[in-house]
Image (cartoon, rainbow, N blue to C red; front, side):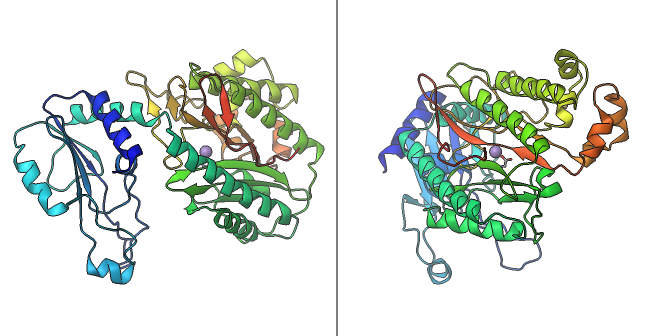
Length: 423
Ligand code: GLY
Ligand code: MN
């Protein structure tokens, strides 16, 4: 067995400290595309399975019994798979057929199912929650194998961003930009894109997850690109915003400087012990203050924050855990509840940062007509916003800047620092 896999399995078992309970981790199965006959989505094992096996294999189950240890049940590669998709996977572990007998011998014991559901097996909800949290504790600090892949993913992303930046100009379409970007990811060593690339020009840059279209960029527009390469199942997640003509207008430059300063300040706070929520609130405050200084908001920061006025322009969280997939083992620590207020409802993680954690930092400011033309929101924030000014900026678009930060023992390492930002 690969030594990093052995180390992870040992760490999970130690963290769980079980006596008699069974843990099963399902890799998952092919998922058919509805209505498309035998077509399936690209297979990805559940992250919990991938972490503990470093393998992507449909139908596999990893099992743990504290009395007998780990058992690794993997379906044998079929002849059809060899014919249609090639034998990229060799037979590993124990033949899946032996799983039923393994389980039968342990009948009557509590079972938690992690990963994907396993047909015919009921999971004990309380035990499942406990072991999932235990596994998350182990997964969050990245080991050297993971960091190496994340650095490679960041480097492949660097190649893609260098390629796209060199072709951006008025007349180039979002799709052409996507092609340059993703070709660079693959040339740079990426296995796949870590998620669907976001490329938006002009007003499309204000759509948080905009899927690139054939629309050409126009002179004077913003271009927002949020994309990343993946290597060995490990993601990078990067956002840069550019001026289509190579130079921001004065209004764009003001907002860009504010987002950049907010991002840089938030990155510097990524230290062991810092609450991620504190970083989010700090970024929200800095955006509120900056918009106040620019005359877009009115009043004072405390009262704006109290009413979440900044969330009209910064309607998402400051980031998330990244690593094994673009959303790694995030969530809220047990006992912490997600707030439904506009400024906090998309806060994806609520926990202190610890050495080895890898997070994104991605503040943004957007002029989103769906929010800024909403009658109820306008009423609620009537006195807090310079609405005449905002109404003239409805076509502004949006600016987001995002890096991937590895928290170290003493501070942080910016994994995506080599991807230049517009200045
Ligand atoms: N890269 C997209 C996101 O983090 O939501
Ligand atoms: Mn992100």
